[in-house]
Amino acid sequence: MFLAMAACAPRYADLGPMAPSELWSPLPYKHVEVNGIDVAYVDSGGDGPPIVFIHGLSSYTAYWEYQLPHFAKTHRVLALDLPGYGASGRPDAAMTPPWYADLVSDWMDVVGASRATVVGHSMGGQIAMTLALNHPGRVSALVLSAPAGFETFTAGEKAWMGSYWHEARALDSSEIEMRMAFTQAVFNVNDAGVERLLEERVRMGKTPEFRGTSVAVSRSVNGMMNFPVLDRLGEIKVPTLIVFGSDDHMIPNPILHGGRTKGIADIGHDAIDGSELVMIPAAGHTVHHDAPDAWNDAVDTFLRSLR
Image (tube, rainbow, N blue to C red; front, side, top):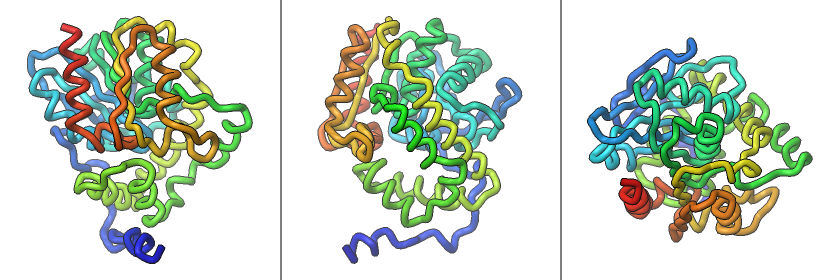
C-alpha cells in the first residue's frame, strides 16, 4: 500500500500552468471557425481517402499519438479537439452526442471532407454512432474503439452519475486522484505518452480555460446518458469494426454494473448488423494506446476490406 501511494505522489505541483495552445500533438494543429466556435484540428493532407478521429471524454488529439502518423501513410487523416477540450474553444453549449455530431458534420464540410471513415473512442464512439445515425451521408464506415453507448443505465443510475459529475468535479481532482485514474482505469500500459498526458492534464488544470473543460465533462457525461443510441443501432448500415480491450476497467461501469467487457461488446456487435468485433487481450479502456500494433493491424485489415 505504501509503495502504491508513493508511486502516486505529486510530480507536477511546482510546474506552471500549460495553456491549451501549448499542448503536444502528433501532427501540427490548425484552427478553423465552425458555427462561431474555434475548432483545433490536425490534417495530414494527401490524396488518400479521408479518415476522421474523434477522441473520448476529457481527451484530445494527442490520445491518438500511435494512430495519426500510422494512418497518414495511406489516408488523409483528420482529428479534431471537440469544443470544450484540448486546444479548441470552450463555448457555452449542450455538449451532448447529438450536439457534437452536428458540430463534426459541419466541421467536415469546412475542412473539405464531406464523407469519411469515422473512428471514435469511448464518448467519441457514441458521437460517431450518432453522426452515422443523424448524418448518414457523412459516414462511409465506422471504427468504434471501446465505445460508449452499448451499456445502458437506469433512471436512478443516471441521476447518481449526473450528481457526481457536477460542473466543478474535474476542477476538484487532485494530482494523486488523476494519476490513480490514469494508471488504474484509463490506461493499462503506463508509458511515456501517458506520463506526458498526465502532466498536461495537471498543468492545464491550473489555467482559466480548464473551468470550461470541467463544464464540458459534466455536460458530456449527462449527454451520453440522456441521448442513448442502443435502440437505434439497427439503423446503421455502413461497415463497422468494434474494438475493445479484454481488460477494460471502465466498461462496464465498475461501480454501477461490474461484469465483463465482452458482454457489453457483444450487445453492440449484435445490434449493428454485419459488424465485426475484435477483442485485444490485456488491453484496457484506451485500447488503441495500450496495444497500438494490434489495434492498428485490426483497423488496417478492416480498411483494406473496404476497397
